[in-house]
Length: 531
Image (cartoon, rainbow, N blue to C red; front, side, top):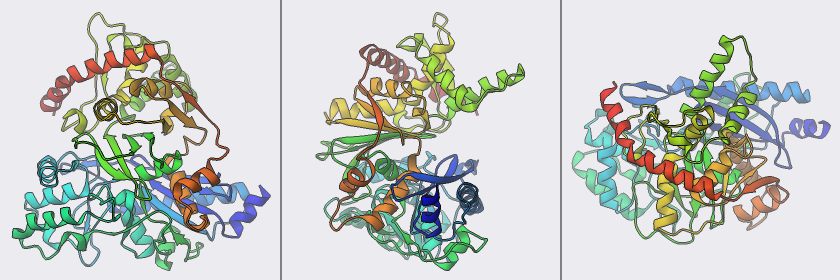
């Protein structure tokens, strides 16, 4: 405790902040890369005017509240004030649309990754580039606004992501990490920059609109992991800490997307490794040995934080509906006067799922709060379905919802594993769903028929991964790659567990996913009929 307090007081702590879908989280790490303090802020997106969004003041207020709670945690635990930090990085949900004019004014409310409103643009750009452009990518949002004839498009002077926006406010620098940038516009793996040929095609496509900008003029500058991305300004320090106690000048790592921080947090930046991040959304990142033979609407091509090509399977929905059912169980217990610790409730219900039938006894769940592109669902309607003869037990019920959390992801992963024959040595899982040992980890291994490892740090997730990227910026040896740094300095003595896929569970999951795909029309009709 004394050494950590001195470390913090001397301004040697390293900070990572990540904007997730339901929480903004901050983690301060020490010289051993261990989390020593944290803070968080709970928030939620809104469906307004047909778009999922967070208000601009909610973004900045949430940042300040998260940091204030971190400061409070530091002072309460170590009896020192957090006044100086050595390095910092900001990460956030990838993709989306934050467009600003020349005066820095937000032109339209933030359009998040969760929106499924850019189908026409995504299809046109994918065809033009012969490269998958998912609906949530920034370029799809921009071109859809062009197709819609939205008045603001001609005034766009800067287009960025949520992480890029926060970094800009803290440093004045309009930059972005290459991993986050790869969710805005395709990256050329040879140059590490935006694909020039595709950018030229886009400019030609929009030329007759008469806008006063070219695409590369409005996109943020790309930085790779380990490169300086500016320093925190006095204005940035006051924004982060309105009390005025935080000093300016800390070094800033390139802002990254939550996919990149997940890779860092799970030591999966080398070829033939991958990770699956499970939260409000769920995505798998597989670092490739070679390019794919074709392109698929279900698979994004992005990069690691240091620019290596990655196949990404992204499902918009994962644990939200599962969490809602757990919340309902808590309410039932409360009605009977029983108060149960939240962690104990999750552990008990998740563990109960292990008693269920491998195929969930015929039960079926769709946890789609929002649209799910992989399943061709433009809007979400959470559904639980059973046939009259299905085995309706609590164990099967919980197992069905846990399976459903990985359902859309599995459909996409099957393309990589079965059609493209991609080789993966190990998948690392991270996110809160893996905190109960031997449940979600086992089911995921069964779903993708691949060993799944979960480290003891798996619950730390994105903000810790962002802090590791900031540590790499200030502590790397000359010429040391990100993969080498993580293995040497962070994960050399890491503890965790690995499970092999259980054959019975794998066969049960296959049966479940066949029903999941066959009955998806019911989910699509529900979205159409239930308004």
